[in-house]
Image 1 (tube, rainbow, N blue to C red):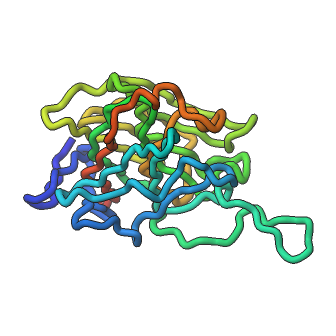
Image 2: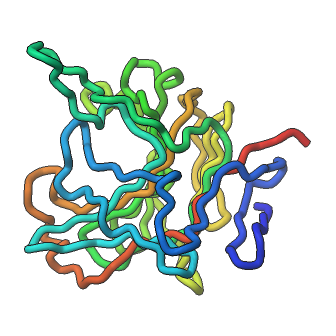
Length: 274
C-alpha cells in the first residue's frame, strides 16, 4: 500500500500500490455540524419506516470525528444510518387521488453522491458495547430491479462488525433481498488491535472486480459480478432484535452507554492515467 497524505491535521490514506490515484470525494468531519450536503439519514427499510432508524445521534466531536451513538429511550434502542443516496425500494409507496394503485418509489429524491469504480476508504473506531452493529458499504439505487447485477448493481459490504471480538465480515449481495438474492465472497476475519484503536477498511472496485483491504492488508478478492452503475455510500449502525420484532435483542439491554461508532474520515479516490 502507498501512503497518501492529505495534510498535517488529518490521518493519511493507504492506497493500493501500482496505480495513480486522485481524491474525488471526502468528508473529514471537521467543524461541529454534520455536512447535510453530503449525507442524509436512512429512515426506511424495504418501503417501511424502521422504528429504530433515527436522525438523532450523529454528532461531530470537534476533533475531526463523526460519532454515531447508540441511544436508549424508555427501554427501546435507536441508532443512525447515514447515506449519500437512496434505494428505490426503501421509499414507501404513495396513493394518488382515488386510484387503488400506489407508486412504489414515492417521490424522487436528489442523490448527494453517486460514483462508479475507484477506491473507497473509511478510518474508524469500532463500538465497544454488545447488541448493535456498524457497517461501511456501497449500494445501488436500483438493486434487484432486474436479474442482471451488472446493470442494476450490487450491495458491496466493505466492512460489517457484529461482534465485539474484532471480527469483521465483507462480501457481495445482489438480486434483491428475497428468494432471488445471491451472494459471493463472504469472508470473516479479525482485525488486530491498534495503538489508537482506529482501523482502515477499503475497497478497490474496478472493471476487473473487487479487492478488499483492512489496515493496509488485502483481505479478499472477488471477480464479480461487477456493477457498472453508479452507487452510493452508507455508514450505518443498527440495533439488534428489531428485524424480527419490536423488542431489542437481550444483548442490547446489557450495553453500557454512552457508546459510539467513531469515524475519522471517508474518502473516495479515482484511478487516473499515469
